Length: 307
Image (cartoon, rainbow, N blue to C red; front, side):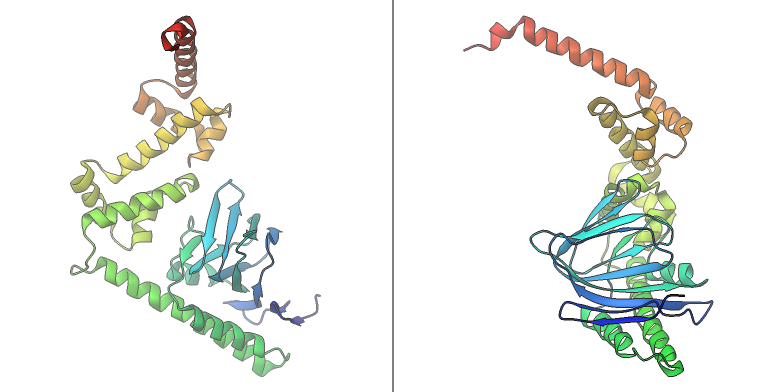
C-alpha cells in the first residue's frame, strides 16, 4: 500500500496517494504546478485526471495520434487505461491544477460536465479563481483525519457541482428558442468540432450533444445553410481527408481508415467507393498514374517553361 504524500514547494503543490473513501466517487490526488519549459508526462493511469489550464501553453497527445494544442481557459481529461502524453510549451510553459479521482459515478459526473466518450478537451466553464479556491482548500486538508477526508471530498464535489451547473446553463442557453445563435452559427461550430474530432469516430449524435442541441435541429441547420445533411457533410469530410492521405502518404488502407475515424475497413471502403466511384486502392493507383503522366508531360515540354 502506497503512503500518502504531501509536497509543497515554490512551483509545485500536491497531495497524492489518498485512500479511496467511497465507491461512488473518491478523490485520489490533487495538485497545482507551474511547469518548467518542455516538461513532459506520459503513461497510463488507473484513475481519471482532470486538468485545468490557468496560463501558458502545452500539448495533449492520445494513443490514436490526435494531438491537441492547449492554452489558458481549457481543461483536458485523462481516462483510466488510456496511454497519453502531455507537456508544456518550450517558450510559454503552462500552469495548471488537477484532481485525480475514481468511482462508479465518475463517468456520469463527467458527462454532466460536458465530456462525452469522444471528448477529451473542453473550455472550462468555471472561472480560474473558483477552480483554484477548490484545489487550494483540498490541499489545505493534508492531515490524514476522518474530518479532512470529508472536507476534501466536499471541495471536490463543490468543484464538480460548479462545472455541471455552468455546463447546464450554457446548454440551456444554446437550446433556448430565444438564443442569439442562428443556424449559421451552429453549422460553423459543428464544422469546427468535426475538424478537431473526426479522427475519433464521432457521429452526428456526438456533435449535437457537444453543441447542446437536438440532432434533428442540427440536421435542419445543415440543410438550410449547406443544402445537405450533416451526416453527408461528415462522411464527405472524412472521405476527402482519406483521399488526401491515399495520395500523399504510403500508409496502408487500414491505417488510413483508422486515421479518419473508421474502425471497420470494409465500411470505409464502401463509403469511399460511393463517394469517388472507385475503391481506395484503385483511387491511389489512378492518382499515382495521373501524377506520373503529368510529370512526363512537363519533362517533355520543359523548354516551354524556359525564358
